[in-house]
Amino acid sequence: AWCTNFSALWLLQETMSQAWCTIESDPGVFTELIQRIGVKGVQVEELFELSEQTLETLQPVYGLIFLFKWVKDDGKRNIVSPGDVFFAKQVVQNACATQAIISVLMNAKGVNLGPELSRIKDFASALTPDMRGHIIGQDQILREVHNSFARPEPFMVEPDEKGTEEDDAFHFIGYVPVGNKLYELDGLQPGPIEVGEVKDGKWLSVAKPAIEERIKKYSEKEIRFNLLAIVKNRQEVIYDVVQCLV
Image (tube, rainbow, N blue to C red; front, side):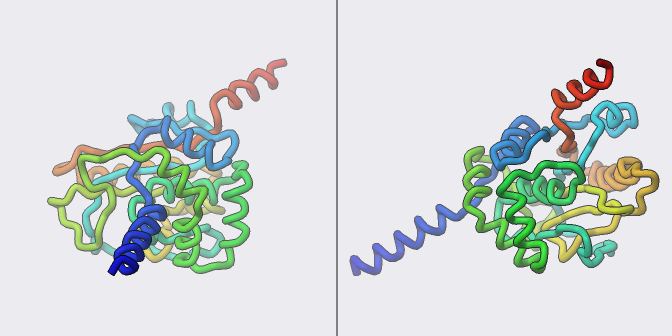
């Protein structure tokens, strides 16, 4: 009996050590999380509007992260084969914030991913979305960095496929351009969702109506949304401008 109890306790502790905790949706938290993962020259900014002027001041923008109250949507989505898109399924609870950020970073042009994400991308690029999700979910460095920002939440932040409009389930998704297309990356979907075609590199003008449509769809019953931009470190941007003037 003692051995049985010890085995059960060990299994519980092992399971808890591999769990992902909920973290706060805060640009400062996400900026530090990205830095501690090893990514260089990137920060996260909160957006309060999607005006062209606001977005222009934040250039270059690598991708967007959108937090919204999740309810099951049976509407038809334009889900496509991953192709050149690094898409990973979310296979562990409470990881959607970090996974949405990683999904944007893995597909962003001109970002120094650092050793850990570079290793994962090199190893997992030939794998299926499900296997990529397992690689990310089981990565000790990513999990430990994520869990270092753990905090208790007053509501459930991970959606369930049986979720209803009464549930307080919140979910993070990413928007990022790859080639001449804009994609929505949602780890709960079977593949990336093609949002639209990008012309002359102006992908934000494609993302804007897609996000506004989603907000409008839920705004009658829900006011809790959060939109974040993953951008180049502002100090580096200012330094580059100064160097051009010298």
